[in-house]
Amino acid sequence: MSTDRLLLTAAEMRALDAATIESGHATGEVLMERAGAGVAAAIERRWGPVLGLRVLVLCGTGNNGGDGLVAARHLRVRGAAITVGVLGAREALKGDARVHLERAEADGVRPVFLTQDAELRRLVDSRDGWEFAVDALLGTGAQGEPRDLVAAGIEVLRALDDDGTHIAAVDLPTGVNADTGAIARRAVRADLTVTFGAPKRGHFLYPGRAFVGALEVVDIGLLPTAPDAERHPFERATPEAMAELVPARDPRAHKGSVGRVLMVGGSVGLTGAVALAARAATRTGAGYVQACVPASTNDILEVKLTEEMTVPCPETGHRSFALDAFDPIVKRMADADVVALGSGLSRHAEAAELARRLVPACGRPLVIDADGLNAFAGTASGLSAGGAPRVITPHLGEASRLTGVPASELEAHRLDAAREWAMTLGVVLVLKGAPTVTAAPDGRVTVNPTGNPGMATAGMGDVLTGVIAALIGQGLAAYDAARLGAYLHGLAGDRAAERIGPRGLAAGDLLDRLPEVLGELERGRDSRRETRTPARSARASSETA
Image 1 (cartoon, rainbow, N blue to C red):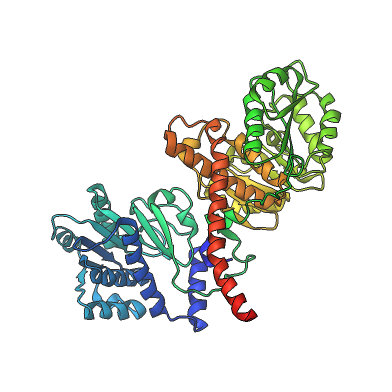
Image 2: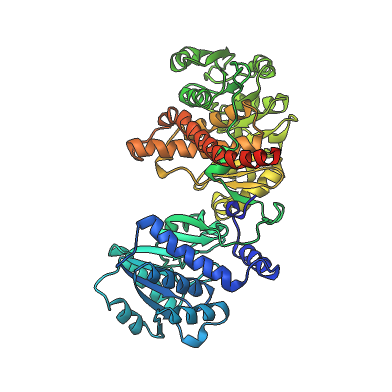
């Protein structure tokens, strides 16, 4: 795995930097040069040429400030009108940062060293406006509340942001914790954050994520071999990595070879949930989708579902599943490639008991959601029964009921909590939310970057259940299906929001977008493969000759 897919803590990033330097792969001075140059290039990629534009660069006295000095030098070469303020005395800059201070001065950059708030204010007021400002105050190693001049620097950058200045943060917006995404009382709001080598957890965890803006990861030449997955199990889902997981379809495929999916769910008042899950499975490529539903809901579900088949099963007087549904459902399970349990199941006692009996009886991969999970509140260890892969997709409330851990605590440790409980329960756990985190029982974790606030509506989780089930049915391993499913689900939501806006977005709006985003990933994958093919062919031709 390349380092740009890893999600690292600040300590892990320092260790990777140190290993790169100690191995002789690159010096600290060279890494800082590449980082600062990457910031300048990223600013132009995002906003276009800086020629003649006014740029304020605020630097701390550590390595983050050194990166900012390099960025200032490269922006000046590109024609920007650069003003640099260093928040501290000249002698406070040491090591590589001092080297790059002297190099910047030799190239015509004239930093102003600031030791008082009033000096900072005068520097900012020296021009009547700024097109850009660069936050190079504190890096990923910062701890606690920013104080003194740094706190004043944050206020300046916040005010400039309010006035319309584009803010670019070096590595991490000042005031955002690199490991947890927690924010200080005041933090820089960046439009663009340029980080180096690998993204950090805090770039993706709220509330910090809201301050990062667009994130760009710059390759600065760290060790080409990533740290081992056991020590660094967290990665982010990238378009390139997710595209490689999209199942290829054999030209000889038929409906029985590309996923026989069985849905088990529905009850009076909740028919929409199982219908959405079934439709999502079809739109994600499953060839044959059936839905076992309580008998009295069958007619309405036959209206809701056209391509999917319905199977009426015994029900209670409450119009939810009865225990007598066990045998017919188990019989259908035996013919399925994957089963999804829980959408619209209801919390009626008999339906919950049925769910608890079906899980150990199911010898197929099983996706469990909603009331299928609520049936195991207090008995979560039973979720892994049955001898086949299990995927559970709880939101925070459901996860809290399963684990007994308060939702607030799970949220505060979202990545580590998902990993811990996936390993403890022996399941693939998809912890829904912002961001959605997919964890495998072997400790691997993928953090999903797609999705938007418009998806906070009923039925979205049912769509996700259908997507994951369809991918398992097409041959993906449970963990790969779950992390690709989360990515596709969020991307479909993003595409739907682009078309109709996030307000009023409904779960059904994602259904027609699912084939589109699958095609989008496949085309990107095929294009990348085609660009690599000629080089291989040329080498093969020369070897043959």
